[in-house]
Image (tube, rainbow, N blue to C red; front, side):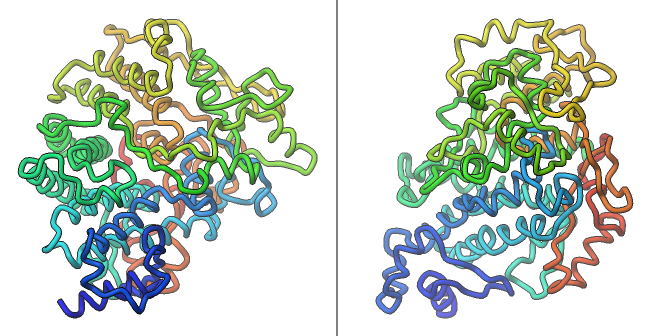
Length: 529
């Protein structure tokens, strides 16, 4: 216990600390006690849950990083573009960059840096005091799974189960990581459920939890929904296990995120990073793929997600893999639709609409989701429309059985145009006569539109199901054609920093994924396409 006290005191007062070979920065609530470290004792830090609260605050701040430079390289220049939500509007490295499938270490290293220097480091602090504060540890476990599932879904195998225990840190196979995710979420929900039963209304971390202000009943719903998401992720790799955990999550007495009042958003303290990227950097605009769906469906969410640049009247999207010259870059920036994300807008984590689409897919597969696929599908659309203040538009939209996605218009540069071949004929209105695969495409397409702007999750779902149909890159410069243009990018390469400091273990990880490390390698759960 004495060593734990010394460790935590250093973590919370010394500005930074070395943890299992990882450099850990103190941020967020830590700043409040960094001003006079000589006066902070261990006993003082126990008051008001300061130790766990500060660590929870750090984890939440970085589960979806609020730093614009990190966010841009970790999400916007990866999943956001690969899912077709956004298009990059810059000439990074003279158009030889991740947008064109030339993976740059300065970009793809960032996911690891954020994961281990911020998320896992904060979790480790709470892990050291978990016996004294099991409920705080349960919340930390949920946050860890939420943050780290994005990381493993970028790279594949990652260091996880033995983090903070041994050096060098070994990698876990992705199948094993998912097994731990399910166990950790199950255990966390059990602990929080018991706490809520014994102490209804208590919120010991109210002053530190920016998502739900310490309301553990809402965290239970969040964790169950996250478990349902992860169960569906592995459906083509392990169908029996997917059904087991999906049914457990959907039928848990603690419930799922079903109403928009329970949506998880992180309130930014300075500036929403996506706003900074599009408005200050001028580096991102409406993606070509989402433009096709929003335009073709006449989807009223278009005006909620994007706005027209001054002097334009058409909703133009930027195709992935587009390259720019000094002459045409401003044409894209000035004529493509602008992300409608304000500087003070909170950051979306997990929303109720997704839970309904997940249950729709489960019910389509014949699983016990507590209802029929059509009802869940339509409730997903309704919930998404309600979220964006479009309740009055719902009935006409869900009844539309004729609108189909548009082709990509050549409104900015002729070469960017794209015509779906075969034609993209997926419609909005549910049709019981359609086969399972077409119904799945319908569910995932509407889920894609409801997930916006979470491009990382949309990219994962595209890789998992092949839906919605995403426009392939215009330019593919992957070395030695390692990424198939039609199949599209499947993962990010392991960081160069790992090859430098953890070479033996990262080489083992490469063997886990087939002996090569590039963007064309499929992850463990990526079995369908």
